Image (cartoon, rainbow, N blue to C red; front, side, top):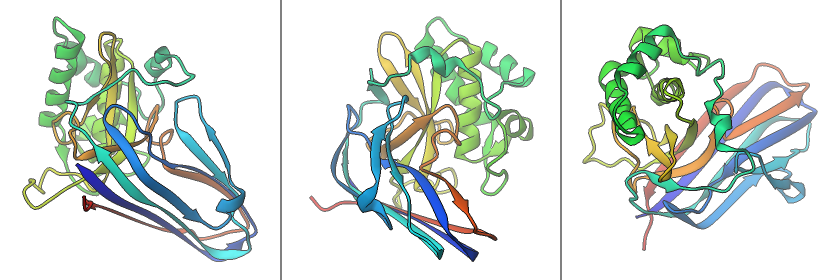
Length: 271
């Protein structure tokens, strides 16, 4: 499937910033599950940007938009050809060893309730345990828009039994790590159409987890929708949690009263 994707982020400020540095993880990787056919990032100052791959394998664009200005617009768009690999990403190349994804963060700390649920999902094989874990979270934690916020932890969401894709992903990661399985956060895109059940579907800007299985490498698990990623999914960046994998991170000097608007559109590209 070919997906046409547009990801636009707009910041507005009551007073202009006079200096900014933006770290953009807005370049999707090519790999077993997808091939990037065309992609571009548009932001003021992009001509002087620095590009590098971080330790987790993400391509980072480091840009310093010129100021002073009251607004900052960041756009990324292109076409990605995706493939249904039953969620299997395989063995990716990054500097960080797999074992670092056993490390808990504040957002992915496992409460006693998450630990109990994880241990109850242990099966004969790692893969079977992961599938059972995904199903248990999907059945237990309702998908409810605006029920949580960006600082909600896995433990908070699991106790409330509701959340959005970020929360389902944090819970899955916390539970997988409880079982000694490396797991990481994935931010990306999901193509939705009229045939899908909108009540349980996430927004086009989506998040899910990947867990490491020695025989197969990294495998995706979307607990929010209860499925492994298909050709409707496009990977963007990975991290230890949502904050670590955020597509846009930066620092500003001089600005005040920030207002943020994000628009993501994912559609079928013409062949």
